Image 1: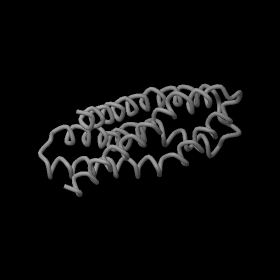
Image 2 (image 1 turned 30 degrees about the vertical axis):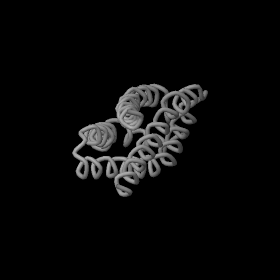
Image 3 (image 1 turned 90 degrees about the vertical axis):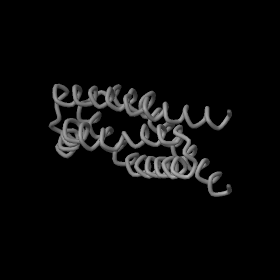
Length: 152
């Protein structure tokens, strides 16, 4: 029972920290970056934000997913399976879709930032913002499932 409680808290904390970080980036970080005057400044700010936030977001995602799936395995409660899979979906979504289409080109542009043009930078940042909102939504869904299950 104490192991189940620890896993429950691990799933809630990991998922909530991931979802909170994603929500902050979606509603505050990206809009602030999009207001920077120069394309070079926007792409550099995006790269700094991404490079600083990615390691912690990966850690929280792994922690929340592992805790949720372990608790599902131990308890059979499908809420933990669904929340774990929702949170885990951010990994293939990022690796298979976002990285090749947006992250890698934005990092290349950031490396040559002084010559970055708005016509290159802005569509990529806009696409990244939209796809990041998808990750934010799925992680918030996972968080709501866990919190709803907890307060039942």
